[in-house]
Image 1 (cartoon, rainbow, N blue to C red):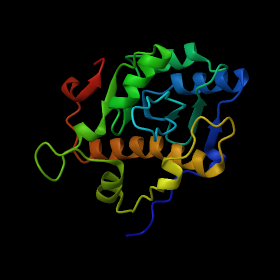
Image 2 (image 1 turned 30 degrees about the vertical axis):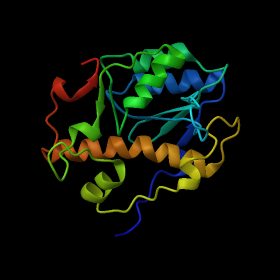
Image 3 (image 1 turned 120 degrees about the horizontal axis):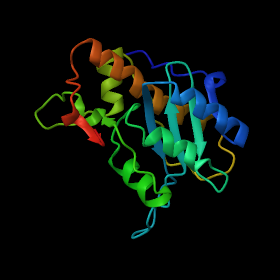
Image 4 (image 1 turned 60 degrees about the horizontal axis):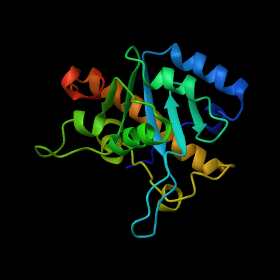
Length: 197
């Protein structure tokens, strides 16, 4: 199976200044559906509690915006997007993402569709991850490097590989959503919206 070719780095915006945040929020608020994900610095010690999320990713058809969670984050702009019931946020395996956003940032994401739960699995009650969905709907193999997955998402300077990985995670969800909807595989009703239908 050919490798999934994700977004180009030139189409990824790291939201690292008030000006970039303003521009990103304006662009994102103009959309009706967004790809959505978060990343958190992994925990390795037994009993260690995650301090994530450390990065919030929001994707349109052509651009992905990466919001590092730090003291300078425009929380109100991000809150307006994530708590909007006009904009549907779609992603894979969003349970812990939503919980961390609530616990760390006080953001109660609404109108969120978890594709892991919404897409039909191979077996009853089986959930579908991004890799399986990419294979099924795009006929491609999505590479998930453990080295990148478990890298330090709290680092103040993310490298290009981290940025591309994070961007692809959010944008591929949006792509799969549109394909599944077009193929009639998605019963788009409030019952499959994870939170805030």
